[in-house]
Length: 580
Ligand SMILES: Nc1ncnc2c1ncn2[C@@H]1O[C@H](COP(=O)(O)OP(=O)(O)O)[C@@H](O)[C@H]1O
Ligand SMILES: [Mg+2]
Image 1 (cartoon, rainbow, N blue to C red):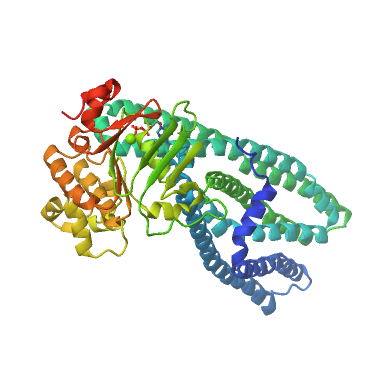
Image 2 (image 1 turned 180 degrees about the vertical axis):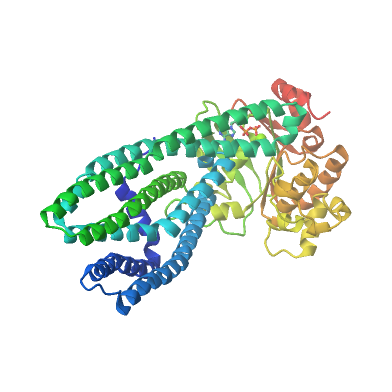
């Protein structure tokens, strides 16, 4: 369930918390802006003085002090503007850098299950837009807010000081304007949230279009995708248009307020002057203050729009960081080496969220150093078994043990340290081949990387590449073939040299010849390691001494491939049509 939108106070508290470490810089920036605003407020007083002198008999020109005061006020403003801009830009940079790191940290530490709700493109879009809004607010609004509020309140004070009756008439118009602004705020906030969410969806859709370009082209689906994209774009534009129709009312509200106020002031001031309770110079000064206040009200309106953006940005970021972090049980032990690599599943039950069927009472045992095949129909739960062993998910019932110790009572890091894993998809990161393989053991020397690549049958294609180990794999390894990617992920797992090795359909993208060579190399690598080989291909499973058959959520049978073929009809139908 989505929590209610945060109030202004909550946003303010959250923002204050983010800004707190930078209070000295913000303090200096705001103090200099305050001084500059105070200087500006002095200008109409000097003008008043000048007018009085000009109207006096005999009239006298402005004094040197008056001119110097005005120059000093403007000079102060220039210096303050520079100092505050430099300081506040730095604060904005630091706050956004911290938020970005926080966000990515939460993302990396989150449990596997909590990532599924949003597409990667949507996450990236959210982070970027939210941080841009926060950056803008700190850079331009934070200083402006105080300066503008100061000028407005100082201006209003001066109006009262000049002529309280006229000032009362002036501020009578305010409640109407405030009411109108509140209405605008309420309406636009909702639209802003909707258009942000739509923008994120669009970024997510764009990412999947880019990543799936080959499929789109092969199915001649360009027009269909373009059509869907246009629809999204249209929806986004409609939302943005509605938002701008309402938020653009801010300015007319201020203009109308200003015009009505000026009318009242001139109307009543005429009477006061006729009564002799006010001089013409006073009216001019009064109007100068009014002219000070009105544009600042407009600036305030713009800053309120920024505030609205920050509010939504913080709300969205918080919402995204509500990911469930992986946490070890209190007092979790370290599964420390040396490990023998005995694996045991005892009555393990698990189903993915929202799925009725999954693993149901899975039990098996694998002796240290043993190599076992895991076979089952697609969707039977083979990958799930490996994922549970890696503690990506926790079983709902039963227990999983390594060397007789329950993995749920051990730290995640130490469990994962004990396991080398080759995932079903050959996942590579942007970087060189060396970087990608060395994830298996950071700091490994080139000789070790080469040996792992040789065992994974990757060395020959690597030496054919112009830059060898230094070849860039491209984002997600897209500059390599699927089989090459797979061999690099195998090399990565070999390099790790953990006591347990999990291969999830690791040979699916290899040709028969490479698979054969790989099988031979594997026997060398596997010596002494406990290995689970999830495989479909006959070439891989036929030679294994023991195969577990996963069927109906349970380990339905086990034996050699030949034994299972001979006695198990379900096994025959799962493996019969594959691998030949
Ligand atoms: N992240 C997930 N969320 C929900 N269901 C999932 C998820 N991953 C896999 N499943 C479902 O769990 C079942 C087992 O999947 P999996 O273990 O990947 O099968 P396989 O035996 O082909 O490796 C399938 O029905 C699949 O649809
Ligand atoms: Mg699988």
